[in-house]
Length: 83
Image (cartoon, rainbow, N blue to C red; front, side):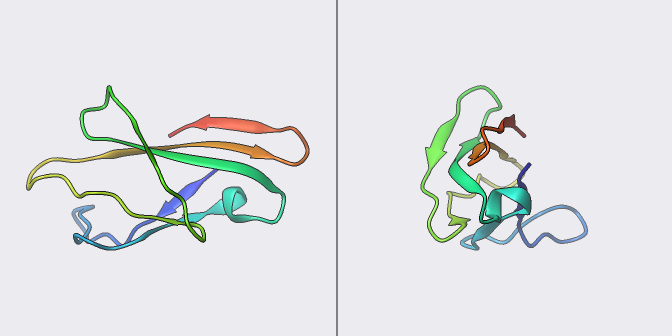
């Protein structure tokens, strides 16, 4: 499982230009592979570059939102793909 550590206000909004950290099992030493994806429309997905457990992406226009999902595999053969 992956958690995304974005700093959000009480309305679940984040500031532009901030890193999002990957947390949970996806950040552990048992990790074999990690791919992260962002969607601005909920239908099409763009693969993000993960560097040192962090990703950057373009913030949407005011009033819009994004979705993040992860594809994770560990060294024991377990895998996860989802939000």
